[in-house]
Image (cartoon, rainbow, N blue to C red; front, top):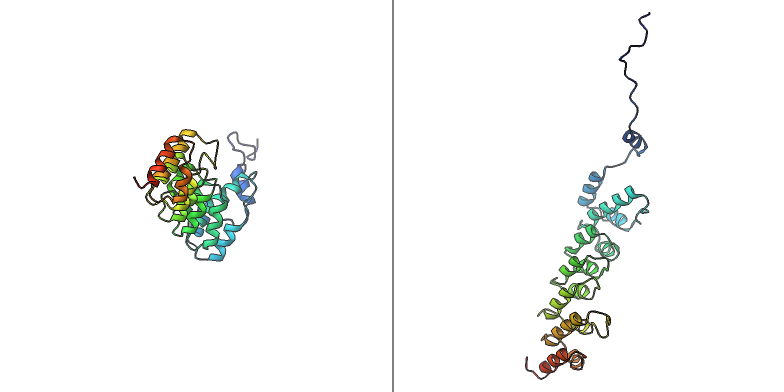
Length: 226
């Protein structure tokens, strides 16, 4: 037997792993998700951020690319150097909670208003915006169909409620959402009738409400006896 005979304990050559195969297909300039996220989060280039905000999302069938893009949009949404109009665009069009939550605390009221009006909001998020210090944001949240009845009732009772919101709330279960739960909608209308900020015209309509309790409350306040 020669010295070149195969040794019994010789190990086969290592085969490339799936990860190695994947790495081989990545472009040379590929950035890991965390690196790109931090770069976009700290970017001061409005053009770069605007381009990313407006780029259509990948097809959902490409799960990896889709998840990456939505994660990176969170960084864009939270960057104050992203132009306001692009943050408004994201607030109006995005259905993703991570992005909407980020935008809901934006310092620009127009961005928060866009989130408040987005019907993809979770009810707890739109409910939080019914407490916003800016009336336009509160109004947008209160008329959002995702808002819970609890938040609508609190809005109708609020001393900060304005005429526009109260007019809307005073129509619930009657002119608007006629199939709404009768008890809940009448509770909201009664609160509107009792709110000192309710315009006389709205209160006069409520004086003829089908709910005797709502009508009595409206008539009492029309008579000046709060």
